[in-house]
Length: 283
Length: 157
Ligand code: FES
Ligand code: FES
Image 1 (cartoon, rainbow over the protein chains, first blue to last red):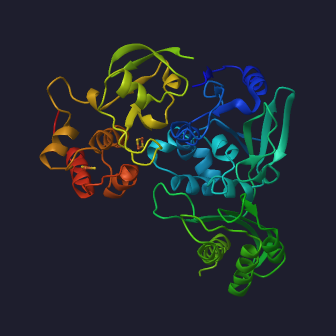
Image 2: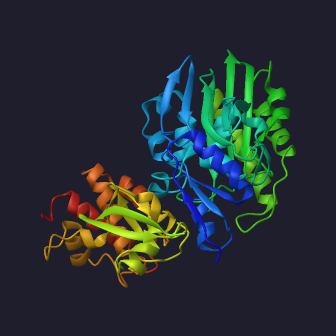
Image 3: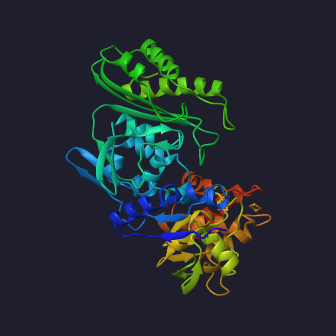
């Protein structure tokens, strides 16, 4: 077997240089909950493992009407954060149904995003809050919108040597809701997940975000449904039309967890439920 | 390439060499002969490999051994005080909270983490917390009752 190298840098610059040096041969290790099963089952053969757990990327701060979340913050830390619970309840909702206690103690939010699974549960809540990612590479840092980050299952715009260092979440107004359906409540990968955020002026929707997980090759913003909502009076009929429009934008697959047919049915129901809840319609 | 690794295992310092892809579970079982943590799935699903890392429950099968440098690991071997069983062990034993026992090391460590952080959990909290520990013999009800009994003070140190 090829000799694998292990690095545990304590400086970001060292980490990005190592990632740049090993390129595709580098495996980034944070909490390990996605990477280590691939190593255990010989599905991945990295030349170097770069452990980023010593870079001090675990924190949640409030700064200038946004939350600044270090990419190395564990899901358990986020769930225990008063700032997250107070300002970003749907992230806490999504995390409380993600994995299980002993997964959340190590899994990080940066890892959940960077692995680019279509089923990443933290992503739909972040999408409806218009979150940005700070990416750091050997040549400096850049900020990108989360919705431009994913290019396919497991594929992102991260360049060789780049890491996610922070997630910036504007504290936007509006009612929010997160809904997910899986095989069982605990520890199950989503069959379909939806997050919504609606700003209302009386009965009228002034702005809206609808995001879906597990319904397309990447987590998805449903702009057609959002456009239907803006400026309209929200009622049961509009909710139904939006749910229809949103699933119309998806490309779900058949897999061992569910059929595409079921995903469309379940996704539509979840969207309707989440929209009603976020808008305060008693449906 | 193997690297040196020092950590504290059940209260005693350990110095070993570990390969970059070696998990904590591999290290414990194959190198150190600490076979309490079991290998059920090797991918984080079953929970029988659960150990405490600085008091927090983690999957040893998902933990790269080298990342525990300087940390404290507690396995089921570290629960009893000499020949005196931990209250959870007593409760599991007396209440038959297992049949084959394969899931028990992980169940015990998860239950310990729960009670350390929340000495009086509700039934719902116990069920939620233990949802990542699978038992093929279906001892779930007895496990919940054993944890409740310990929380109620029925088994003292
Ligand atoms: S062996 Fe670690 S969770 Fe199954
Ligand atoms: S007692 Fe047999 S698996 Fe739990």
